[in-house]
Image (cartoon, rainbow, N blue to C red; front, side, top):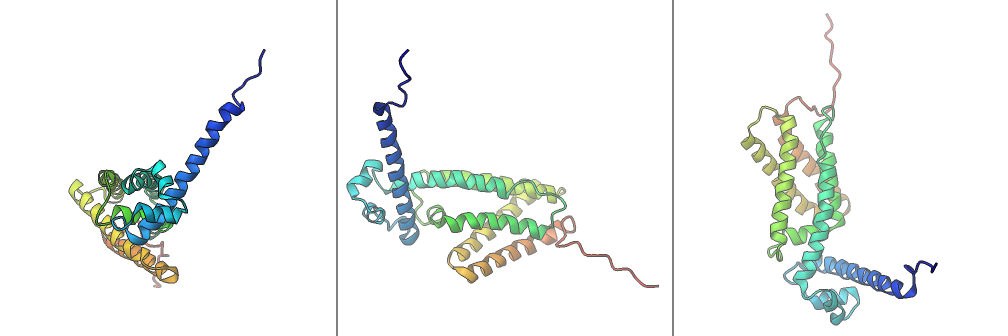
Length: 225
């Protein structure tokens, strides 16, 4: 019987071309992320992206017809990764977890993603969001708001749906404002702004949650007779 020819040179060449194409696309997307973060989407150009990637504009156009197509592909990949981050950051909370710890852990996960991918904020919150990214971002925001409401409903079982929705939107608004400040700083100042955001969210939620999730478990003082 003839040997299996699946790994023949003729079939290996398309695989190599595909792998090279994927590497080139990744290179272009990384360059675009750098340019969009530095200049913003509106001011960016395909020529600038090609220069950043170290390729000719003609090479770029083999993969993307314009900068909007680049932004859409980049946004799609980032939103897929962000959904995974949401799932981890907004997992159900153990009732024994102090509120301050729960808030801090969620903020850390979200800010870690955004500091590693600053282009996400540049694309999603810039003045000119490209193409269908607007609709996809709105859907992602709605999903996030729903997850926050679900978490709050466990902490505030007597709250109405309207109250939960309002509280979730305030939390998201505070987070977005804090994130903009965090991304504008580096090093110790970034850490300080991150802590300030945690403090603001905790102090907003603590009176609502009450003693269901205390800041810490404090020993009960005994009175002497």
